[in-house]
Amino acid sequence: MVASFETLRTELADGVLTATLDAPPINMIGPELVRDLVTLLRRLTGTTEVRVVVFDSADPDFFISHVDLTRVAEYSAEAAKAGGGPQDAFLGIVLRKLSDVPAVTIAKLRGRARGAGSEFVLACDMCFAARENALLGQPECGFGVAPGAGGVQHLARRLGRGRALEMILGAQDADADLAERYGWINRALPDAELDEFVATLARRIASFPPAAIQATKRAINELTLPTVDAVRADGRRFQESVAAPEVQDRSRELFSRGFQTRGPLELDLGTRIADLPANG
Image (cartoon, rainbow, N blue to C red):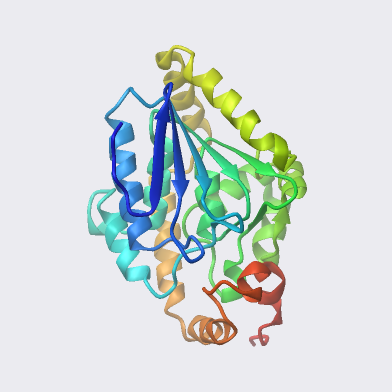
């Protein structure tokens, strides 16, 4: 599978495609990354050459930080190309298609995956994380919005009602051990063991008959994935909320403190978002 991307580096061996996320400065989801994901998903849908995809990051601190809040309209326009047109101009539709591709998708998590980064991880079939440095979080409520690309849907199913409310409303980071205990990820592993564990599992799955793998994945998807209509509803709610005055005020305050730059705020967003002035 030969492909050229702006924000992904790909390598294919023995049916396993490694897709390395590389979107400096902090791996935000913007139009370029969404465009590359849409292209990748199309190619995965039309090939039997790739049986497993392993996503990792070129940035040791950030797997995917979150969406680029200055380019929501741009990445939404790219997302529409993955669906049926303007009615599907939501990142969640792209991530829903990531869950649907015939290949098995595995997130190999080092660094931070917050907001849409966490939602990307949740859309993958499995996630294995480095115990020493992986963090997941849904900080959207700290901005004044609800997660809009699958976080509510997946976490309610995986964590149960109480824990989903704890993590989404609390807007706090979860380290790999807590994420494993709550069911957010498959396993937390020592960083030194992560690469070999994922590589061995990916090669093992890729060696099995593809029809059996795909049929099993389809059956489990039917039981566990949110409907496309539910994903659209979350996307509409997110886009409408982002424009609210209180959300704009909180966003401006975050940008004044170094949001979307490589610095203390982004590195410790799960803690520092609670330092914003209270509303109401």
